[in-house]
Length: 136
Ligand code: T46
Image (cartoon, rainbow, N blue to C red; front, side, top):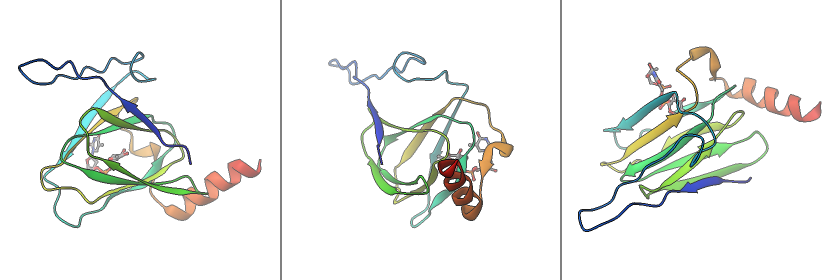
């Protein structure tokens, strides 16, 4: 599976670091929503869904976490532990987030507003959908 990561260049100086992410320039979509996940309890695994029409960039801006990806044919585990590195996830990708460090802040830039109808939360439905598309 191809893992698409973006590395953003920090504007560092003697005061510290600053990262700017320009929609449509540094990432391939316009950002309509930002959310972040923090204070995640030990052992928690979240996600367990795919999206029908959503592009996202996941950045662990503090601490670390891992992302399990599954496209219905292959799986991959991605470690996010750098504030200047973003993982791109688009449609038809089952995702689970786990192994959050105590201080982890997972920032997500999303192409669309929140829409519960865009979620596929049943794994068998997801598998049937992606494998059905491949066969067509
Ligand atoms: C994703 C992964 C990486 C909202 O009201 N607005 C929002 O924009 C979001 C993202 C969530 N919510 C509500 C819906 C639930 O009541 O917040 C609650 C927790 O959401 P959820 O259980 O979907 O969170 P995760 O961590 O399982 O998944 C989230 C995103 O929902 C999802 O799109 O790709 O992070």
